Structure formats: structure tokens, C-alpha cells
Image (cartoon, protein in one colour):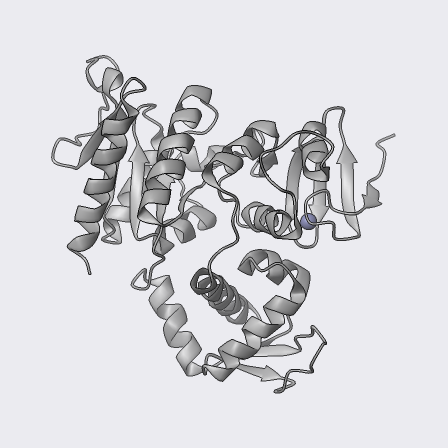
Length: 334
Ligand SMILES: [Zn+2]
């Protein structure tokens, strides 16, 4: 007999009513806020504060992780599935890069995108699930989300019912997007309104590459530029050539796209092509040793493209050159 799920609080966001399907070392969790994901027992211990971590697991860090799980950003996928995997290496990587909630302008984009997608597929007036929407938008609480919704109504993007916020009550009735809201949604959809941050397409799961990229790109370069640079792992189907929605959204949203070529990952080429098609600045990264080796050199003709080489022996030169290259390509656009 297959055992049924256990019900309990979500190990990430603590929301009650999450379902667990336990395997020995890791379990699959279904949470109304975070969505479905796989977490190892070690990662559960770390988040509970029962094992050492460089992250202070406050409500704000947990909410930030819940947002990344929901939007599948910065986490590798559990092998053979499209479920994000929360394990110790992932938490270490996030600790290096800095686990932060989206800034308010990103929250606004997430909110309007979600309302737009849902209004198109259902009725024009939608009644959101506050837990799910809290994780999608990336706020710490339902109360903060409610505040943001009423701010967006004041700015003319939404028409809410009830039209006035009840003080002290976190409640959202129905949301209707106004014409102004739809115009904003359209600009997001076309990629003409973008985040300040970037996106990196690369292969997850190579520990050496992961360590170099998270320390230098997600860490040093992002900090120096004052932006976030998200990573999205491709499920196997994407590697076979179909770009999925989450990936498309992340690329559309990005101000610039970095493509790591050292692995010759097919998915990365698709992502590069999609980004080029949208007119995003695309910068290619390649390990110097791979570039110099005729048998491993990227087969793709990237000679005419901007490629920044990296090597573990000289990360400083790479960081400096990448910052200059990103600044240069953004300067031409603004
Ligand atoms: Zn959760």
C-alpha cells in the first residue's frame, strides 16, 4: 500500500496544511503558498535553525525562499522533474548571493503579471488566494500584500472590491485590472518594461561551475551593480528544445541576459536565441580552458558576439571585465 500524505506546517514558509510525501532522505511538499517542491531533511533542519547556516532564518528569509520556490528561480530542479530542489548546496549558494525579498518595483511587476495572466484565463474579476499570491509577488505577509494591492488601486492600476481597505484586516476581495493596468501588463509582456536585474542561463549541477558563478556573478558582480541576477534551471524538456513559461518570463523581465557556454547546454542556446529575439543585450561567458580546446570549444558561432572568458585562477579579471561589459551594453539602451 502506498502511504498517503502527512499534513503539517510547510518547512519553508510555516503555512499550515502543507502535504508531505516522505521518501527516506528527502520529501515532496505541496504548500498552498510555495507550490510543490522537494526538500532534503538536512535543508529542513537548517531552516528550522537546528543546523549551522549563514542565513538568519527570519520570516523575511523564509518568505524570500518561498518566493524563489514558487517562481522556480535560483534553485536547481529535482532530477528528472520540474520541481525545485531545496538542499544544503542550494541554501549555501543563496547564502553567498544574499537571500532577499524582491524590491517593491519587482513586487509590482510580479503582481500585475499574475493578475493579467489570471484575468485572461478566467473572468475579468478575480478572487486571489492570498497565500499563493503572497509567494508569487514576494511579500512577507498577507497584510503587506493587501497594502500593495490598495497602493496599486490608488495609482490607478486596479479596481478592488471592497474599494476601501479595512484597517487591520488582510483581505482582498476581487481584483479587476484597469486599462492603465493592462497597458502596464502589455509592456511587461513585450519586454519593454524590464527589471533592473539580469538573468543567467547555465547548466546547474556542476559543483565547480556552480561555485564559481555563484561567488562571482550572483555574488560579486550583482552586488557591485546593485541588482539581482537570477538563475532558472531548465527541466529536461527545455533542454530538448522547448522553452518553458517560467524561463520565458525570467528572460522577458531581465534587463540583460548572460549565457554560460562551457557545457554546450542546448537549453542555454535556446535561451540565448529567445533573448536575442526580444532585443535584450546578451553576453556570453565561457571558461578559458574550454574556449582554448578545439574539441570542447562552443560549436555555436559566437565570434561576433560579446564573450567574456573566465578562469578560476583569475576571478578578479573576469569580474572586472563582466561589470564593464554589462555597463556598456546597458548604456546603449537607456
Ligand atoms: Zn510554503
